[in-house]
Length: 376
Length: 108
Image (cartoon, rainbow over all chains, first blue to last red; front, side, top):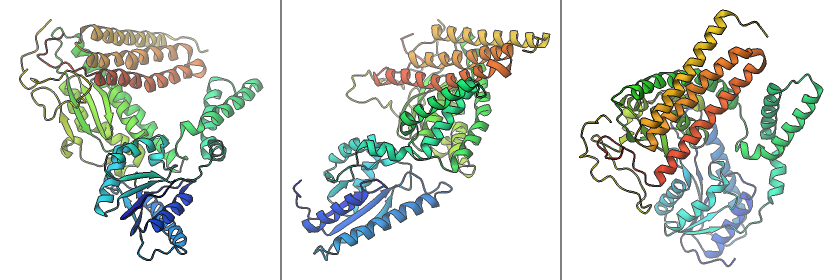
């Protein structure tokens, strides 16, 4: 690949990957060759600084950035680039980052603020542990006016990656879980069941451990499982309550429903925490998660009672308790934070977020349609 | 397997009836409610409490020691898959530009 002239500076988002060292080397070489005046390495945080127990994550990121800076300085020793400054930064600690759009946005803001014109991407860069995010992120970045390039480094083949990751905790966790499930269904004291169980669990772990888990289990994992187990009866109780209320509404002759669509900005991380919350909301009759676009949940509510309950945010607090611990569960309700919007009806505070181009019908007179609900 | 005492039989009957009741409510809701979103609410009732009480009755009948535990597992899988399916349907309707029904809407 021919190096295009870079006059201003280069920004490289980094994470611990197999190709990080090579990417840093390439970035240093490119910056020196093009006479760039700044080379920045940034870490996009997957946590918020308000969360408890983030010191370890922050320390980890700081260590990585220090390491990267040392590498880059070493690489530049031989190059004749006295004006080149190397800087590092951690970005996005004020909010959970969701999806390629927000990652791209943070990078763009940073690049603008520091007058950097080029983004160099590590081909193995996996924000939030999700490889599939790299290409959409490149796409988002390409519309910002920044120059975006992938570092032309040799990537380890998929085969090597699978083998190396199979030795880890992930394999053990998936194997143990599958084996436990098999023994629950079968009888571990019966030799046939024992042998087939071990074989099946091994096959499942070999083929699926990389897909099932994208992080190694940590000391936090058993705690989460215990807290999750506490959550189950709470959720069942919530489901029972709303079932009775909704059943009464459905069976009453006048069918007193007041469906509206609402939007709630939730304070949980992407991935499993968001899925847990969205699914809990859907499981409870009266509230239904229609869309999860980043941290905004579009929730359809059937009756005002369910809407009030949703805005009180007890499910959100429980989700935070499970994933971030007890201190994290103490926070204002979505209503107090002003993170709730009603999107339809007389109380509407925002519009339904349909895409402009999808040909969907729009409710122009939603605010005017206040007529009483009539019996069928 | 332990013998079926009168109390257990009574509990089994109560749970079965409750399961039937919520399944009936769910079915009524699907017929009466106006649009795909509100129907998705009530469809989840059959899966949560309808199936929940039915499986509780099953667990009581066969005894927790044996296959009863499997019905707990069944319930777990229903609880994991039901919201996923409901969300997929609602999301598909939303992406298709289907405006949720509100009061005063002519469609019914």
